[in-house]
Length: 215
Ligand code: ADP
Ligand code: AMP
Image 1 (cartoon, protein in one colour):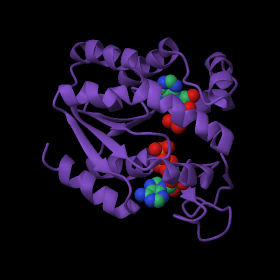
Image 2: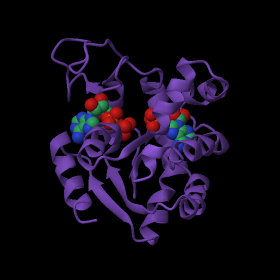
Image 3: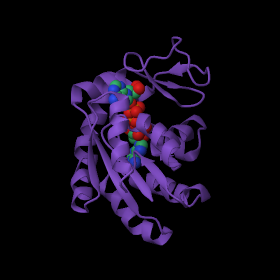
């Protein structure tokens, strides 16, 4: 079964994903993480994607769809997977609708995490990520025990290039235009569950667990 995490940048998708994949033993697919990996390794895909990511724009559908198609074919996805940050356009959602029957997986739930815009800006500009294990922190809301050091692996924390105020504002605009229509798309299919993301991390997680335990 597939679980999809939908929501604007900074809503807490990655933070909740860390918990969900452990509790429900799902494979994790974050298109953002895969693309950042490709940029770091300077692959062909990475070179193409970087120009869009740096500007807060979406990477073209055909590139992202190819990544997800490959990843869903991995053996660890056979039982189910958590999609974080995909789909982000109606074209991507249509691709999933067509691809899933072939792969033999269904979408169990789309969790739509909703958070007020001012809060999103504060979350994104204060986000820090571990350069070694990718764990997420926040200067104010989830500070590491030692400044700039990951609690989990001791790696250095860094600020993502696209978490500057200017790029954050662009990403929020892109979300409204290109991704928000997916809320209605999945609502119509009867598989959307809105989540109040304006709560602390544990309270959001509790709300998600109540929904996932019913599937
Ligand atoms: P997304 O994956 O949706 O872009 P993240 O999970 O990376 O968002 O969260 C963005 C930032 O906000 C991170 O620094 C994270 O530590 C912090 N954060 C996540 N959830 C909450 C929450 N419920 N309350 C406060 N801060 C949060
Ligand atoms: P994220 O880590 O989910 O915040 O994604 C970071 C950036 O990667 C986005 O701003 C986009 O440029 C790109 N990206 C991630 N997922 C997608 C997607 N599904 N479609 C297009 N671009 C994406």
